[in-house]
Amino acid sequence: QVQLVESGGGLVQAGGSLRLSCAASGSIFSINAMAWYRQAPGKQRELVAGIASSGSTSYADSVKGRFTISRDNAKNTVYLQMNSLKPEDTAVYYCKADGVATMSSFANYWGQGTQVTVSS
Image (cartoon, rainbow, N blue to C red; front, side, top):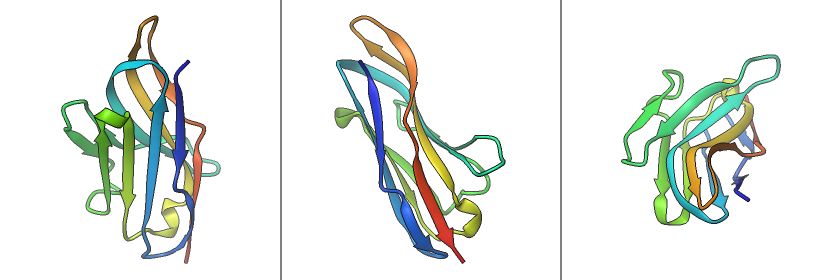
């Protein structure tokens, strides 16, 4: 059974930083892409940043230059370093793992979400 567990959320003042982590557990052979999404109250879930197994990255325009996504393939873990945080970054942040291969399955998985609140 594959599980994604996020950590690192919390309350921070505008201009501050947070680092989110998401660890995938289970009998995993490989993971294609990993990504961070966020959902603010009353809004749709949106893609924040993604990283392929090769290490290539992509970012939403709203976070370019402030957020950095990285991954440790040996640990099946993805990180999101968030700097210069703004109140509009307040949301529940979810990680997603695409193309997770185990002995018996090949599927996508979501984490349970971690709250990030940025005060002005």
